[in-house]
Amino acid sequence: MSLTTPAADARSHEILASIRQAFAKKGFDGASMQDLARAAGMSVGNFYRYFPSKAAIVQAMCGYDLSEMQAEFAEIEQSAQPMTCLRDRILAHFDENALKDGQLWAEITAAAIRKPEIGLAAREMEETIKRLLATIFAAITRRPVDEALVRYEGQCQMLILLVKAMAVRTSQCGPAAPPLAAQVVAVVDRILSEISDDVAEG
Image (tube, rainbow, N blue to C red; front, side, top):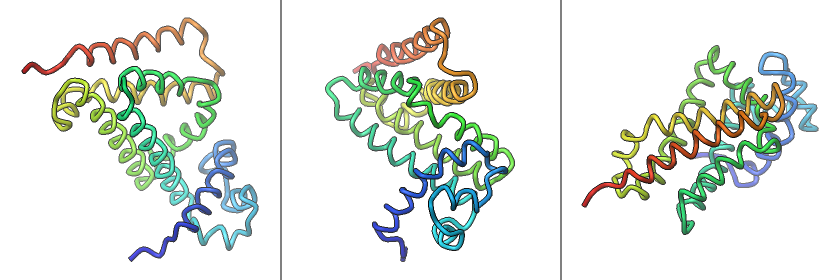
């Protein structure tokens, strides 16, 4: 039985919110547990009670961000025009303010190569997002979710890649110039349009 309580979960989320920028700024290897505890306004000993390692922090960040995404996808599913709503949400992720975590995700991506447990958390997160996208596409094209997941796997991966790449690029180079932004929007529109037109017969 889990000993985690709602209060503990809420406190963990508060800690994660307070240390994100410190983690992103100093990097996975550069940020010590002391640095992160200081950013959270906690003693190192108390900090370790919540997160025994940096890998545990990254895993918790993935879980926290994923729970927010699941809530966002639930709203998309319930909207009157799911594909339009999905497009709006995807493009909103390209906004400069929405991409503030780009450096953090660049660090997590790099750490995932070296740390198997972080790589696993990152892959699980991506697989969940793929299924959330496929659920929307299944409803639009009147197909079973598992069929949509296979049929549109490339499109799902491309959309995820675009969001991640734009986040990392913005953190390193600043907002995309209008010609690049226009190209990204065109790719998103093409993907969503071809799926919308691929309605199952019968």
